[in-house]
Amino acid sequence: MRYFVQTLTAVLFARYDLTNKIEVANTLNKRVRRILDGEPVFFPIPADAPAEIPRIILESKDRRYVNTVAMDRLELVYNEQGKPRKELSDLREDYLRLIGDIAGIAKVELKANVFRLGFVASFLAFPSEPVQVIMNSFLKEGAIKNPLGLQVHVLDRMTWNELEVNRWYRLSSIEMSEATGKNKALSVVFDVNTTSAKRYEFGATSITAFYDRASTYTSENIKMLFPEEKLPEVS
Image (tube, rainbow, N blue to C red; front, side, top):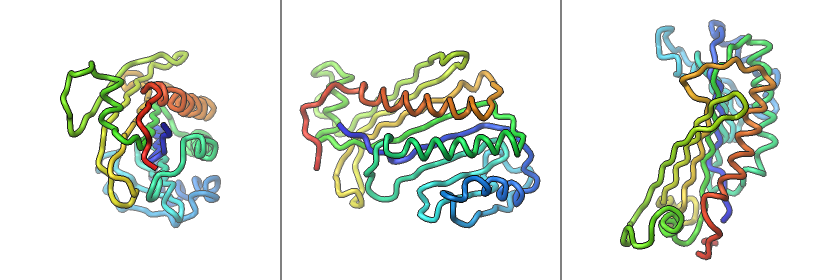
């Protein structure tokens, strides 16, 4: 099966000075303007509002790329517009380069203390029978008779060098909108993040290395979730 990207999300959990939002936006724009070429959006958020609420949004004119800036995080999202057509290998190089630019700005110019990292990749695949694909891989034959929908959520923990890393994957059969031209699909979400129980001190190089490894790990493991299916894909 082929897995097409819906969204990619990188989150850098950090502490830094966001008092001057215009200055922060201009600093980011020095490096990311080639892709995030839309007009910056500033939100008049009260100082005592929750830290995770975005204060600034930088985005590309086609809205595929969005960089949100909050008091406790910097977030980069790739959001496919319309029918998913690209695989992770098609997007990975440009996405990692943009993360590297943001990481460099965060550490060198914003003096950010980046203490936790997360990467979430959401995919769609189009087998003819998504429910059957999940059942074949995760359920004993005959365990459930003719389910209309099915979801599987799995959490485990790994160690990447000195990093304690959570890995979630969430699989579900879903009904599609008319925009995709398909009636049903298999949704696969990989979520790889450093555990919230431990804080790290990430530099620009180690931030880029984490996302390089997380995206490679996702690419390699997504196709290991299911055996080679004989069910046809929907064209």
